[in-house]
Every structure is written in C-alpha cells, then in structure tokens.
Length: 409
Image (tube, rainbow, N blue to C red; front, side, top):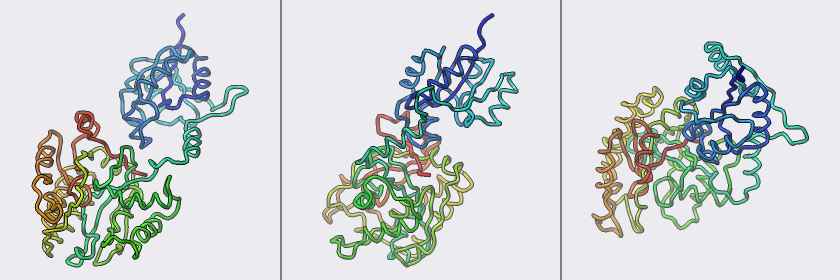
C-alpha cells in the first residue's frame, strides 16, 4: 500500500532547524510535499522582500531529506497554496499550531483531507528557532543599517503645506510612509533631505513613540532657525515619513497642519500597493528651481484642495477610476501653479533640456497606466504612476527600473 501524501506550506525564508524539525515531524505521517510562498506573496504580507528569492528557497527545501518534493505556490494571499494542494492531492495537511485557522480546516474538510496541528518544538538538544527571532537578532546585530528609515510619497495636495499656498484656500495634503525596499536617491522628490536629517539623530530606525510627536521633532530639527537654507521644509515631509500608512494633514495658512488623520487599514493599503509604481528619472539638476514662474491664485488652490478631497474619498472606497482621475487632477493643479515642476529653470534661466515632458508623455501612454505625477516638487526624480496592476507593470518594465511601493504599517 503506497504511503499517504502529506502537505505543508510556508515561506521558509532563512531556513533553520525549526523548519527542519517541522518537516521531520510532518514526514512521520507519510511522503512530505511542501508548498512555498512566492516572492510576490511574501512581499504582499511581510511588506518587504524575502532574504532569499523563491528559486533559492525552493532549492533549499527540496534538499532537506525529509521532503519528497516542493513547489512554488501559484496562488495569492493567505491561502496561496490552493493550486499546489490541487496538484499534490494530499491525504493529510499539517500545520504548526500558530499557523492553524478555521479557513484551513474548512478547505481540508471540503476536500476530504485530514487536518493535523503540531506544536512548535525544537529538536532535542537544540535551541528553539523562528524566522522572526532570527531576523530580529540580525537587525539588532547590524549597527550601520540605514534601510530602516522610511521615506514618503506625496499622493495629492502637494504644495498646500506651504503657507504662501494655503493662504489662498485651506486643504489636505495626502502622503504615504514607504518602506525603502529600493535605493532612495537624493534630489528625487522622496523627501530625502528630511530623511537625511532624521539619520543624523536616529541612524538606524525611527524610535518608537507617538508618530505625530515624532514628526514635530523632525520638523523642528530640520528647520533649525540658524541653518543656512532660506526656506522652511514643508511639514508634509516629516509627517509623511513618521506617520505610518496613509495620512492626510489639513493646512490653513500655517506651517503645521490643523489636524492629521491616518489609516493603516490593510485592504486600503493593499489597494494602493496594487496600483502604484515608481519610475526613476534623472535627479533634479543642480541649480534647478521649480518655483520660478509660479502662478498661485485662489481658483488654482481650490482646484488642488478639491482634487485632494476626492482622492482621499476614492482611496477610502477603493475606487480605482476615481483615484486615478483625482490623482491626475491634483497633479494638473500643482503644475498650473508651479509649471517649473515639469519645465524647471536652471540657474534662473529656462532650460528646455531639463524638461520632463517627454518622460511624462512616454510613461503616460504605456499600457496599464491610468494616472501620473512627479514625486515631491518635481524637476526630476521619480514619476509615480497609478496603474492597473503594479506587480505586472513592474515586471514588464523591470529594465526601466519600475518599482512597486511597499507602505509602512
């Protein structure tokens, strides 16, 4: 009589003795088959890339002598293993006790699969291991890592955090705090000046404290009255970095907003991650000015504030068409006031070769692109696109540096 088929599923990044012990215990019920979470699924749920790519994790798991065979799960989400389950057709599904769920029990019951939960126990004589504890230890051991400092992307309402804009009409700026899963280049519209100021105080990561108070501290530190810079950095930079998830902040003729609201609702943040992509452009040129030639009027600021209001409502309802439309309207309102965002002056002179119009025309006409804006004050840096499917778009345009967005929870 053939052995029963046993199935387990997980990511198995940083493969360790705890995983091997689990495989050994599960293989005691029959021939063991393993489903492995894809890189895409890992990024979606862990909000960072795995230490080892899926092909390498597959190779390592297959090399464990207790494993009969292994597959990369083709599904998405918490139950990404369903396609693999239908390939293997196991008799038994084994999970660690903390990995059990009513959903998995239901799936097994519907398919006539025996469901078994195992307690996590270390192999005799060995220390208990988990991926989270190993990553925490690695993080603590790293004394010079800078990738823990987030950055921010401005979604709508940019410039209204400057009093000389909001004096015409109050309104919201909308930002997301972003995990730096990519190289954050200077002079590229992702608030690197504020991020670099933070590194002077906290080189590795942000301290655990009230996010709004943290943003106030960063804003005051960056805008030291004795510094040489002749302008006040907008508060949306500090707030966008320090306040997790999606935030909006209301400005009314002041440097600091009247109120701040934010959400870390998982479905809302996933909606944004599914539809945002970054395209690297050349950095803002030395001597570049995006404020020369500005034309700020009440009507134009009202259009900016209205677009930001609609943008927030569309994101909250996860309305992609509404999000794309209001996102474009916000950018067009910005450029109407600050045409230098797209056609910057360099050394106080018009500079046609610094124009970003050709970049915008190229990417805005790409299949799957619904809306676009330049990051930050523009003049170069990144084009932030609203797309139908970020993972698909970034995969198809990987050679151009297209990058998905991972929002900090």
